[in-house]
Image 1 (cartoon, rainbow, N blue to C red):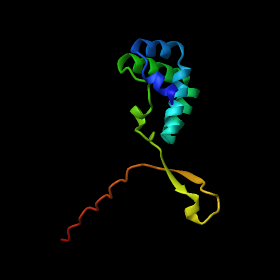
Image 2: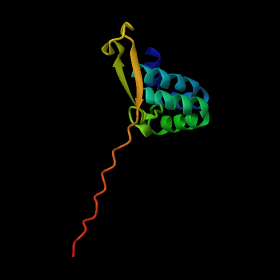
Image 3: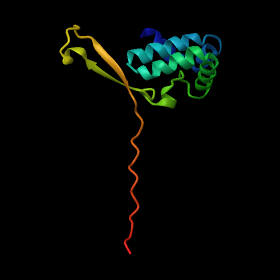
Image 4: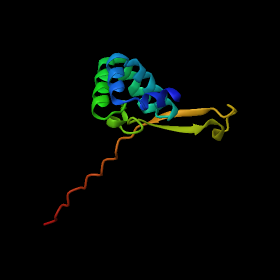
Length: 124
């Protein structure tokens, strides 16, 4: 975590230079922060857009460093959980003997749609 605090406490000019020249440091930072905070949805976005579509992450880091004096986070776009909610259940609650293993499953977070009201028919 000293690595994360070091990057967070850099002056704005240093963050801008790091964003331009040493952006992989910010990619590693995002993974560390999101994994330690158990934001698995954001880890998915870090992997997809921070590693696979690297130029997108690079440009966002430069913009965030210049305008907000922060390191870019996908939580700005997708919410704190990355738009994907993971539920943790303790495997020992299910009667298995896995010595405290944790099971993680993804849950769809789509909002419920209100039920459509049926039009009233008038009898004549």
